[in-house]
Image (cartoon, rainbow, N blue to C red; front, side, top):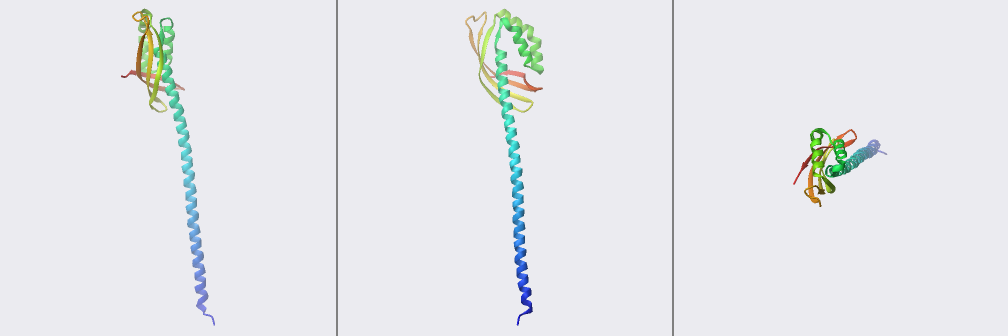
Length: 181
């Protein structure tokens, strides 16, 4: 004879086993879904970071190249082309630095012409100090050979400058130049 309670115990054991299997499967699927979402978020954030880094690298290279060119323009002069030099400097500057240079342009022209100044410059080093999308600072080392009435054979000069730049429209312009030692 069979025990009437045996079926109930067997059914409970099967139900308990199926319940555990279901619970374990549900937990495993939940963990898997959370892991997939986490990996997707991490991959997306890494992609945005890489794009931002590439953009910053491009911007930084442009800033340093601009500072190099502008320091060369500031320190390369000749008496015959002083008006072109003044125009170029005014075109490459902004803010109070531009205003100050603009007010002193006539005196600058006279000094270059009267002194027979001929200066050829070359940037030897340039390095980024700080930059964001609107402002930047670059340290620039430059050498120039300056010929004038006092030194007709030329005199070697070394310049170290901290150049501040401002992003205006699509162009980086000098907003300040500070000679540093």
